[in-house]
Amino acid sequence: MPAQESEQQQPLLVYSDSDEQEEQAYDSTEKVLIIGIDDNDAGGSGADSGRAPPFSWKKLWLFTGPGFLMSIAFLDPGNLEGDLQAGAIAGYSLLWLLLWATAMGLLVQLLAARLGVATGRHLAELCRDEYPTWARLSLWVMAELALIGADIQEVIGSAIAINILSNGVLPLWSGVIITALDCFIFLLLENYGVRKLEAVFAVLIGTMAVSFAWMFGEAKPNGLELLIGILVPKLSSKTIRQAVGVVGCIIMPHNVFLHSALVQSREIDRTRKGQVQEAVRYYSIESTVALVLSFVINLFVTAVFAQGFYGTEEADSIGLLNAGQYLQEKYGGGLFPILYIWGIGLLAAGQSSTITGTYAGQFIMGGFLNLRLKKWMRALITRSCAIIPTIIVALVFDTSEGTLDVLNEWLNVLQSIQIPFALIPLLCLVSKEQIMGTFRIGPVLKMASWLVAALVIVINGYLLLDFFTSEVTGVLFGTVVCVFTAAYIVFIVYLVSRGVTFSSWRGRELKSNSAAEIEN
Image 1 (spheres, rainbow, N blue to C red):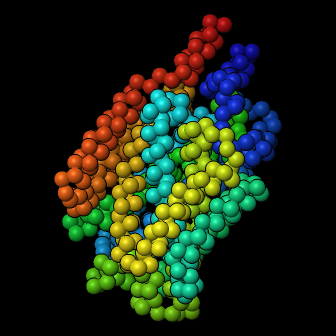
Image 2: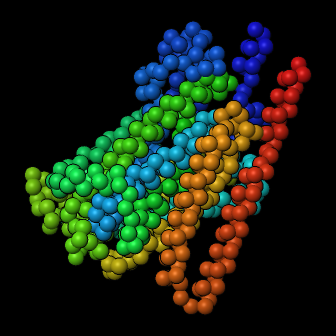
Image 3: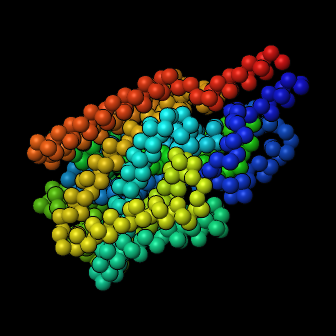
């Protein structure tokens, strides 16, 4: 019996005392308390015995939140633009791909949550310790670039919504400035606690669901074609670009870092294997529910534009800015003008995604650099990196209608480039016993995860190749792109090879402690 108690008290991972001084995703006072809410914990059974206690709806409710914040990245303005263009150009034929892309995104996010729960640290923090300085700084720069690219799209989307809802009174640049202020709203909400912040995001997601469901009802899509589109895989040469866009915008690099940190907002005893198992189970359930809801919302948007514009002359010219006007012309006013319904949904998507982008920026900067800055300072730095270039773009766009489309193409390419630098470290870390202990993924899940990662990287590689072959002109520019591509491939190969030979100081310490335990 003493040996059993000793085993229960032994932490899954052993860290040095210096870790207490490191930057953490959440302070202990900010975390939501999970332990001791029902009789299962009080009796010393369940989580205390190394087994997860029976399912509890109350505990599921307390764990619910991080997955819905994570799902915002699946509903940001960039995704909505991909949905509407896929629907207008490909009709219902790519809905099956949207379903499977969401499933692949879910797998990646579940691994990120598993990493955060099992280690008590998020992906950026672990990368800081597992990679040499040059690689760590390179990964940090890549993550920041991906975040800035996503943030620009989200801020522009929110500014477009403000322009729509103000009947054009507020120009795009003023909408950007208004959206920039949401970081202060975020900081204000944080002071009221994690659950209050999550409640606000639940309202924003609900607003999107109601708005786009209303549009879905107004459009009255063909039910049979909708079902066939979901169940029957179909792809043609004319829709390959939209197909690549559907898959490419589902995996957001900054979202992988974000989710691994969000799951640490719950207070669990990581020395108890059963409690860690329980947390992984509940986070898996709530993340699945959140992404099912995000799939339904994306389906609504795709179906509306498929029903209204597939096969029409306007299909190739619809974008985020003019989508509301096209909807208004197609479906008319109704009980409430569909233009404003679209604007409300787009505003909810833009505002929620910019706030989560600020959140992700804090974790990325704090994790990679171990900066002990105040939250308002990190939020201000993160927002400034995106807002300043966005204001410039907004001013240019006011005089040139083609600027936004060109910008979105380049931003999609920017984020596609960054995907391997979030996926590969995640898969390497979550596969290692030295990092995850008994919660490392097994061979089947490991193979499936690497296949998904390879598929996403290849698809995005196709997007990059297609983009650069059409955009790159001139010897000098072509040379620069070739040099960049070579360095890019070498770095990816390095990350993969590094994953094969991971041997962190934490792993060595864990093994030495295990050996000492056996001898005793």
